[in-house]
Image (cartoon, rainbow, N blue to C red; front, side, top):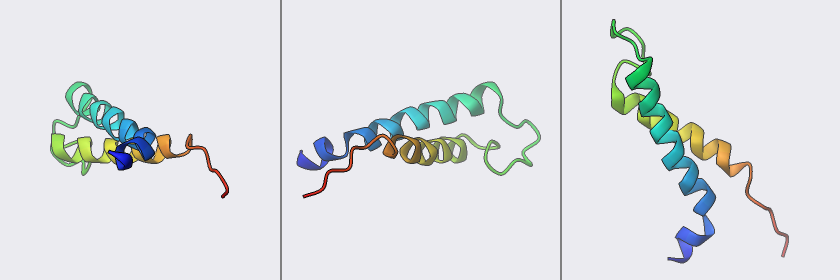
Length: 65
């Protein structure tokens, strides 16, 4: 439970990014199958989750002990 509270922004970013990645596949996507990221829903969702985690990790407060 402590891990979840400590990294909640990154976990929220993963969820938001995964949802947006799947939405990008669903609404825009690649119909020919030649696109590496958007040709399959799993690729697009994982890529979105990674980008979301990176984006939300920038909002984390750094505290010095």
